[in-house]
Length: 30
Image (cartoon, rainbow, N blue to C red; front, side, top):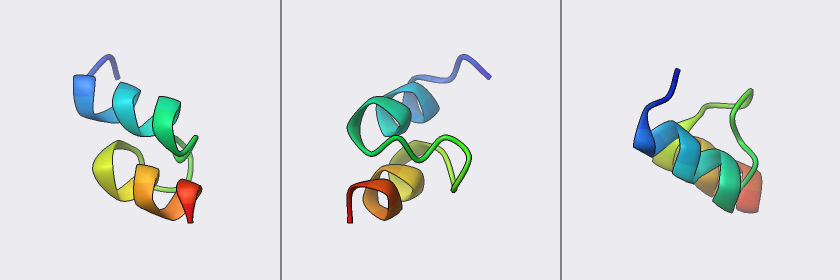
């Protein structure tokens, strides 16, 4: 679970639980 995409998503959008990665970032941010 230490994937750069998931980490980036969690940091940007906090979407680790929502989706993780770029998808989670978009959902969490929006």
